[in-house]
Length: 270
Image (cartoon, rainbow, N blue to C red; front, top):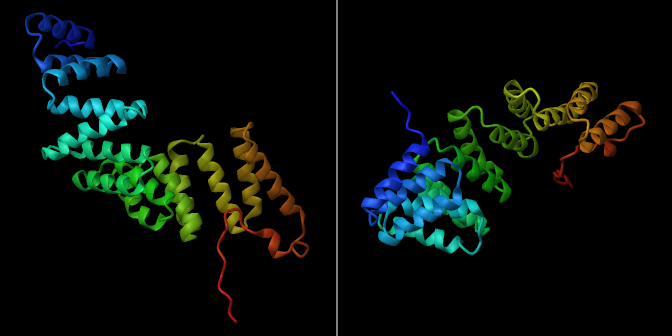
């Protein structure tokens, strides 16, 4: 069979408009054609046309709101919100509606609301990739990393290749749970998929540093600096590890060996 190109579809809908220019679906479909061509302004233009004729056109409400949210336009945020709200009021909200309400709330820096909307999205769709990750990121940035973990586990169960999810989980394992083996697994998992992922490699080096395996850490950082010769933080880190290895064990006091990410203190015993 013959695959209909977006150009051909565009011609068909434009022709249809000559016979029926009051049909919101034709405008909507033209909008989708432009969307597929990544022509966002034209897409939005046709979604608006559809909504002029039928202000309750569900697909046009949703897709125009998504485009507005993704454009990052602050002045139009309220328009996007109102459109999604119409779908909510009419009990026509699907996971995309909740997800985009969450994105708008994040744009407004309203963490509580964003969390509520993303929760709704992942209740409706168990494997909703972006909603699971954004919810986990939100929780971890709000200082609630332990609550992020179940969502990261669920994300990675459905999408084992989600690199940002693995980075975030590894970070929580190092800094919150102090489970270096689990963190190492996250970073090695990424490196199996993307052998040149500098962030994952550097974080793996950090795991060696945290374990006090300085020789391993040095070799690891040397590999990282060959991969990313311009990354100053890697060179600096390598220097620190080399300095540490030079100093003899008795000369170095425990105080100088504070871990790079350590902010925890233990309680006083008396």
